[in-house]
Image (cartoon, rainbow, N blue to C red; front, side, top):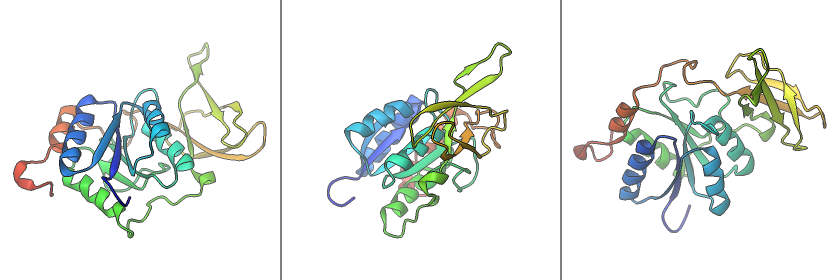
Length: 220
């Protein structure tokens, strides 16, 4: 991260959140780009690898659960901060491949301190799992005639897809064997926003809390 401005990619499906964070971080001196979902973020990463990735966990198309897992496998040097209003506390949610967690609704000073701590040599990675232990986060690939969800996993080793029976239990980490190359795969189903442990705050409240008061100087 030496030389030039620190580059940050912000990924959130909420336009107001992306805009607010981008404006404030640019004012402080960071170079910021934004994306509205995981697929858009991957397209941005093909053009340039930033110093930090800040992504929402619950997004349509591709969630932050899925994006952070892909990023940790493909770009292990990229510092990742995940954020959500559906989880409480400072700990990275179980199974999420990220270096830090920011609870939406907290002051922007908390987010800035996370970025600054990860910029230093002492900024330790919160989840130093090996690539093999990082779960692949999946969403339903379709539904059968009875309305039950069907799931498909793409093996990270042989890149071949195969069906898997999940039977509910969103968020729990499981293990299976690739139907083709027999390699072990850890996977989990992306939890829906209404089934996680804590309810999400109002979206407009998130934006208000992300905007620091002028007198606060971006501190708690």
